[in-house]
Length: 416
Image (cartoon, rainbow, N blue to C red; front, side, top):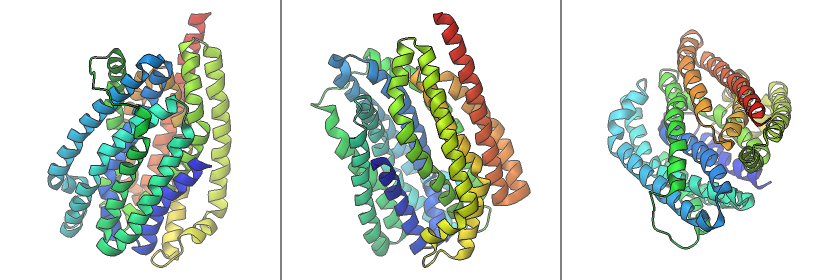
């Protein structure tokens, strides 16, 4: 319940922006400027959760707090440097990111980027604290703290958008991770100095390095998307972003309810060499998630326009925009199917401490996806890009399924 409510609150902020401001250059600049924070959120949150949860789950109680503080220090320091780098160089790389924007839109995007990169530091810290709480099976408090942070963010958005325009919306997105970091910080307990030479920190870094490097590459597909869409009609980035956010919201609800709780159990099965139980668990969850995916997509196809009208048909968001949004949901169906199943399969790899295989698949898939996306956009514009993304996600999910079956088959044979 908390997970669903939290996702809806997070989506409410973006719904409020597009219904009040409308689809415009301002919203295009905001969502284009969001690309770097979004990229780091996708890379950091996924990578840290998948690596740190299994590691912390199996560590002894005596070293748990020290390891947690070590991860907090190390990750926070690293991404503080990264955020400062992006802040001071924004005026150089933003024009490259959105070459189709005019001068005013580029300048606005630079201003909004410099606000939003501040949140990257707190996003990284929150990711560590999520992992610590998940390892302790404190799932409810993670969601409750996120819900409180989202409510505060909505309040800031309501007043900030009226007082400062689109810049107020950017600050509202920064406020959320700041407060969630503060809410989750007590889980670390009394302060412990950073021990970068600890064995657990070394193991985590060895697992994270290929994951972070690979994910930074193959999850940068959102940069390519914004690059291409900057050449499309005004409002295209906003429409595309909202489509992705609707599917992301659904993905998050399903994942947190059905995927997050089984990660510790998968990790324990792998650590105990109980590979039959490990495979049975992720396959059962795969079947269930697939059924949910099909049901939801059929609802979007047959009743999506009606549902979107109830949610979006206010003030600046007109019927034509609703029709375009519905059609983008249809053509991006592969993002929904492939995103859900791919997340389950890659998480299953990470729970077993295997980060190389899913990273290689992600890198190869993205490399092929670049060609698919550019060709599809050239042939079909924004709709073609949506189809290209669907193909890309389905290819990745298929490869992950194939290789995890090979992986578990070998493990089972080794233990027999």
